[in-house]
Amino acid sequence: MANNALNGGQVIVDYLIREKVPYVFGLCGHGNISFIDALYERSSDIKTISVHHESVAGFMADVYYRVSGQPTATFTSCGPGSANLPICLANAFFDSVPFLAVTGNVPTSQFNRGAFQETYRHFQADFPSTVRAYCKRVFQPTRGEMVPLAMRQAWKTMVTGRPGPVVLDVPFDIFKEAAATETPKPEDWSANISCRCGADPEGVTKAVDLLLAAKRPVILVGQGVKYGGAAADLLRLAERLQIPVACSASGMGAIASNHPLALGLVARNGHYQANHAARQADVLLALGVRFDDRTSSSWLPGYSFTIPPTQLIHVDIDPDEIARNYPVALGLMADVRTFLRQVLAELDHRKSKPGGLGHRAWLQDIAGYRKAWDAFIAPGFQVDTTPIHPQRAAHEIDQALPEDAILVSDIGIHHNWLLQYCKPKRPDSLVGSMGFGPMGFGVAGVLGAKLAAPDRPCVSVCGDGAFFMHASVLGTAVEYNIPAVWVVWNNYAYASIRGLQRGYLEGRELATDFRHPETGKPYNPDFAAMARSAGVEGVSVDRAADLADAVRTGIAAGRPYLIDANIGADLNPGGAGVWELPGLGQSKPAFGVRYRTA
Ligand SMILES: Cc1ncc(C[n+]2csc(CCOP(=O)(O)OP(=O)(O)O)c2C)c(N)n1
Ligand SMILES: [Mg+2]
Image (cartoon, rainbow, N blue to C red):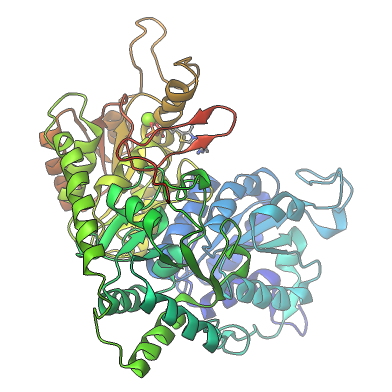
């Protein structure tokens, strides 16, 4: 390394430190030991967390960002080690979450020779092709001196525009090869770039005209509001114009659920007042939301939305999402927070009065919808059975969480129950995956949440299927003393999928539940005992009345804690929308009917 003081691995690590990355999450292999060596040298500046499955590292990095706003990095070896990561890349990509995945590869001198773990049958060292569809960009420096450029470009790509994960794929020798005398400075290459672009001024005027003329306006918020830091401005606009706010599943918490203007969830399983208001709206202001099938009741008009005739104002940082699924009266490419501030400034300019819209009747109608929905769901809160009624379970968990708690949900029927019956107060109160939906996201993600917010209670609610799939998290929590709480929503089944077999396939059930071969009874490991065997506190709960206390005790324990909760599997959370599995059929709304325009 004659004139060059830093090798490739050192440049990467130094850049991460300059970007104030506190943690890297990963798993070793021969392909990345030189990178780990560079981390070793800087252990006092950046902490390395070694996990027991690469996807745990990816989900930790993902949720770390969702809670703190600080991107981090993962490290995985060549071949299979990195092949365990794409599920996390896809999850982060689809939910617009940045993290840097440093993946090892075979030495450049061995490209195309089919060396151990080389992906070579179509192209040399071809990990980039493997992940191309699942990340924002892949960089593969093949000489040491290419590393500084690749590193700074990777970071910039990751955090600018619509954020997303980026892969830095580094051949074995490049970690050790001389790279640079100095690492690039973030101040020069990424830290001073703003992507808070506003909407075009005429568009803002038009948006304000539409909102002020509306008789039945609704604001629909998605993840862009939460992670774009726009919640405070959203509230200002909603209160000023007295416009009710509905959320997609990813937007839940952008406005506190107990705010009088908060409608709740619009979705196939959405709250009646949210769906029924959104589908009748004359003007719908959609902010950082992308109208996927679950939000939109499979785009069947009259369940979640009726666009047209609803006039849609769709604001997003990514124009690709605008008019993807619905025609727009006005589409504006903008950062949501900047747009909201533009609208507020325009209202100031016009001296429009708060609540001066005369749509009081609209708010009264909505209050009626809310009352009807509350009456419909009321009985579920009272049920006291074993296994625990899922509505009751979601409610008890919610009740036990202090206001600053972070609940990280996994994927499955439990997530749907949580979305309906938890009442998030803050943008990061309820973290979930909606784009890719990989089992394990919440099981592992809670560890990232706790590292990002050590002073806040962090609870994962996860399915028994997903927990068993990712039970190695117990070891990681112990090794790094991460006091996460897992509530294993134990229904002895891949219940969400079994529900589909029951709903769409006349109950032909196969491969969706867990049974003992001799007794035929529901089978699962004893998760509480499993936790204890790993050195994690573990308890089992059978009764609804004990669940909230168990969660409180788990939070108070201040050490990793698992609650194995026996929860009923035979119910689906009913909502005001529908979902279609093309070719199999459509579900029916559990409450209300399809809205039809005259
Ligand atoms: C990695 C992965 N495999 C399969 C699926 C398909 N899938 C979605 S939900 C689900 C069932 C999950 O079972 P469990 O974790 O027990 O949650 P439950 O639905 O019972 O609450 C499955 C298999 C998935 N989303 N991710
Ligand atoms: Mg299950």
